Length: 202
Image 1: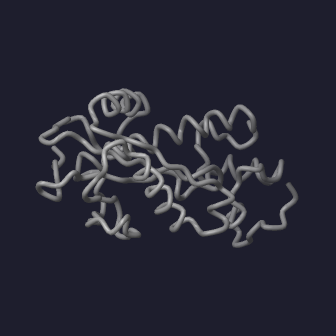
Image 2: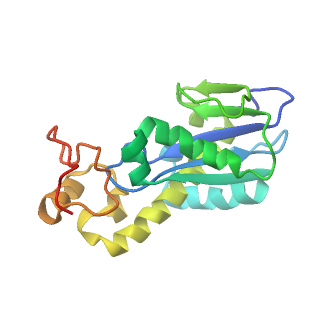
């Protein structure tokens, strides 16, 4: 069972991102504030759950949370500021949208850019340790998957329905055969050969 609060007595938002390692698409992050004493034993790291389970839990989280929000940073912004900064920016955008103002932030991982001078904690594998971070990981993952599924309808060459933009063999073969889409991150090594594709024909 995952932990409840990290900061006792403070309104605490859990944050996580999805899509950092993808070759294409926006990076998504979510922020979730759960009620005091809330306990959902089904919450876990989104990567350990089936798609159906994640979607069912998303509905529960959106129903039960005191506040939740999703922040998005585009491929163009990722290319401009780098993916690490983009991940933090997506989290800040999610936090900005919360209907309840947090007094502290807990984040999956080992790095974070402070948000409005609030106290924060970075927790390695936090999505498997704290319920608010697990909830954020589920929202970020499901909203990003829905977005990539929609893009896959427009650009079927890259197998995004299956890989969600991650660097699979089928994805890279699609890039070789069809070039890149407007949604590819040009600052990434798209073909896995050490070359960047800023000048790749679109």
